[in-house]
Amino acid sequence: MFYSLTGTILMTDATGLAVECGGVGFRCSASLNTLKKVGSVGSQVTVYTHLAVREDALELFAFYDQQELECFKLLIAISGVGPKAALAVLSEMTPEQLALAVSANDVKAVTRAQGVGPKIAQRMILELKGKLTVSTDDVAFSPDDAVSGEFSSNVAEAVSALQFLGYTQSEAAKAVRGFDPAMPVEDMIKKALALLAKNF
Image 1 (tube, helix red, strand yellow):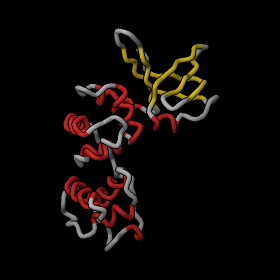
Image 2 (cartoon, one colour):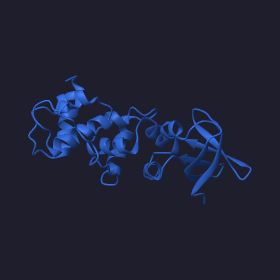
Image 3 (cartoon, one colour):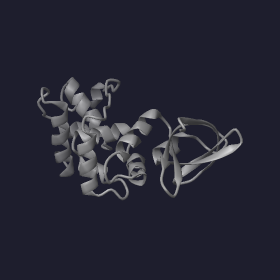
Image 4 (tube, helix red, strand yellow):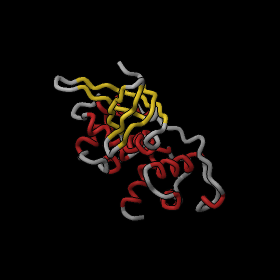
């Protein structure tokens, strides 16, 4: 019903924002990542929306970009995952970070979202396999980034993925040190996460 809203931000709080369009103020729930990007009260903004229809209420959700909106739709399509849990996940991590967590089977990263336990996190990862993608082609590394020699393409992607999951470049580089450059990126990420979990 609603594709997007363009207007002036009337208010923001910890759970969402209100956008005035043509004299009407629309109250929208939003993730923390969206709220960080939309700007302050009085700013002009365009947000992409999803209308949730229930027997007792209509609720509008706003997203800074279409990638986050599509990720939200995929999450709420999972059995047992409602809008509140989906927003919690997207408040804790970006769509790119979620895609990398899914690729690496990193249940712990997903459970950092408020109210999301291990069982739901495992279900999310299972259901989202192959549905989320992330590009790391634009990530560049300087010579200082390398622990030993130059990064291979696979190692560079693995380090980038670990950074998306919240680790520093130094931690990520240390974790992949010594890995066979021919190892698949996904295997590198899994092995590195196991090492990092042990405070490597």
